[in-house]
Amino acid sequence: MTYVVTENCIKCKYTDCVEVCPVDCFYEGPNFLAINPDECIDCGVCIPECPVDAIVADQDLTDEQRPYLAINAELSKLWPVITKRKAPLPDADTFKDVKNKGNLLER
Ligand code: SF4
Ligand code: SF4
Image 1 (cartoon, rainbow, N blue to C red):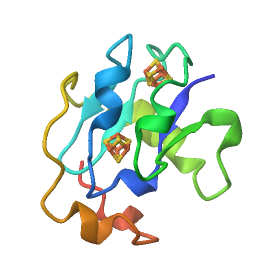
Image 2: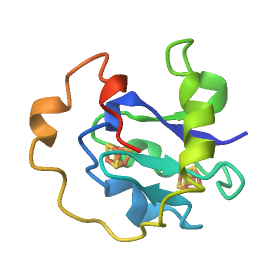
Image 3: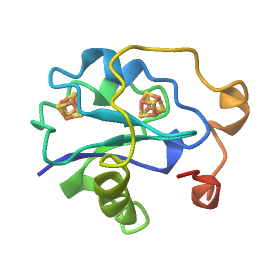
């Protein structure tokens, strides 16, 4: 089992989640964060921290969200770790309610 960052995070990157992770398993890309499934200990403390409900336990993923399981596994191994909160992206508030923005994910 693991927790997964899903589409809502794209172009938001509020980063509230990274401060609470006890094992520092969030990795930062240009406009998205990914959780390393091999490091996540399934504690769930990051879930309520995310203001856009982007973090989901793998068994709770919808069919639409399921591709993010592989996306997190792949991208978390390519990107640097992030452990400290930083300012969200400048257009985060504009994009937080936008649906179907998966094509905007930058690698
Ligand atoms: S708090 Fe949510 S939107 Fe912000 S970086 Fe974490 S997962 Fe992404
Ligand atoms: S569930 Fe726990 S270990 Fe996994 S990413 Fe969230 S805070 Fe980190």
